[in-house]
Length: 183
DNA sequence: AATCGTCGTTCTT
DNA sequence: AAGAACGACGATT
Image (cartoon, rainbow, N blue to C red):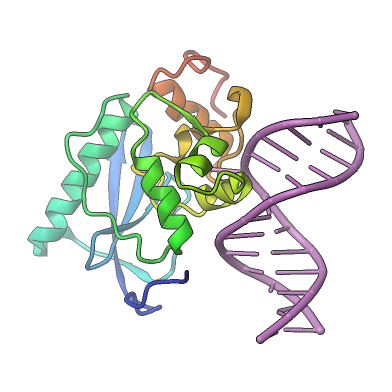
């Protein structure tokens, strides 16, 4: 299946910075919700967003607060109390299936790429699952960092393996407690 | 460490 | 429109 009809390809996004103890994340909101989240120093994902002030827009202010709270919770190893609406219209059917499966992985737990593939009914698509994880536009909140390769091997991470290690460590996942120095 | 099967997505004809 | 190339994989040798 292919991309959803909505989302005019040039649809404007509202860009908001979110401060955390680990640096300044960047959130990009569409009219539907949070569409992209960038790690500190990596806010280069899109050019179709414009920086906005949340002062003027109550809804945007609320979504930003929800995003910040959820982000802070996960960075502290806690389950978020609530989530902002997530706009995943840009994803293909397969990608959305994968991303939805990721959202069911509890904080502090992990799955393998193969397990996710089996869960969405495509048990031999393990490699494609990895590709879909890499295309996840909302990392951390859609917890692609909780997917490891077989035998608890680390696997890959688009934003850099150090971020994956940090997130797993923050969630107390065994084997990542007090880890290699973050570079 | 090298190789092969597998599959969704993207890039080339 | 069709085929080749390319991965955040996994299993085998």
